[in-house]
Image (cartoon, rainbow, N blue to C red; front, top):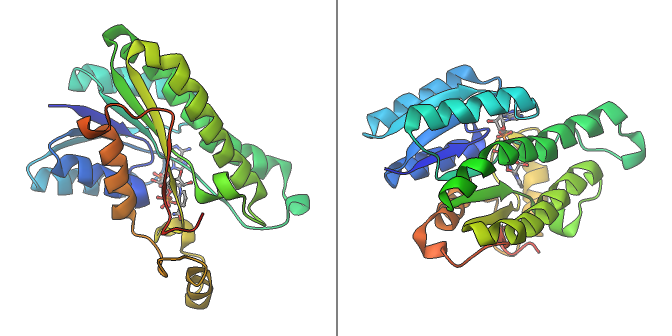
Length: 243
Ligand code: NAP
């Protein structure tokens, strides 16, 4: 049975992705930072479906905690086949010039250094066995740029640059690195928006609606599957045609 480690799997896209992998017969390592109850409930739900999942607490921006987590997952599941770097934060929207330096650093610490910490810790395992897949979560804003989301957009553009460069570096070792760029998805990240805001935004989406976490999860599972064995260094947009 294959094993996937999903960061930030307690809620939203990560949670939906954990369920989708479990339904496809994978063992799931569910990373969370603060939402312990939600993470444990997810594992119970997966167990109820006949699957196998365990929770692992770690703040992805904490390099030592990430190394401990990866070693623990590898020891308890025997191996790790796929890493999904999903954990991410957006914080508040606002003008770039009003953004506190501390908030900008928090965004980069989670969205960029968190991804790098997990990747750096897992690559030696993957290189040893000459296989493995890494799937990173970028964003439509990392491709197109979003007004009043400048720092978040920059962090998600960094995810794309990282993905493309690392894919070339790791290809000779048989490791594939790709990213998914969701558009406007119905999760807690957008829970602060009013119904009117959501309707206005959906007018710009060619498919005319907000996306579901499940729809992103299915794309992530595709990239992890054998059907994507010749795909690396790519950005798969799941955005209803937005960019
Ligand atoms: P969400 O509902 O806000 O959930 C965020 C998840 O990330 C939670 O499980 C949270 O865990 C985890 N997390 C945050 N900081 C963490 C840290 N330091 N260490 C470990 N886990 C951490 O977000 P989402 O909408 O599912 O987004 C998932 C990913 O997709 C993010 O990378 C996001 O940028 C990207 N994305 C989302 C959208 C969208 O419209 N929703 C669009 C484009 C891209 P705890 O609750 O346990 O702390």
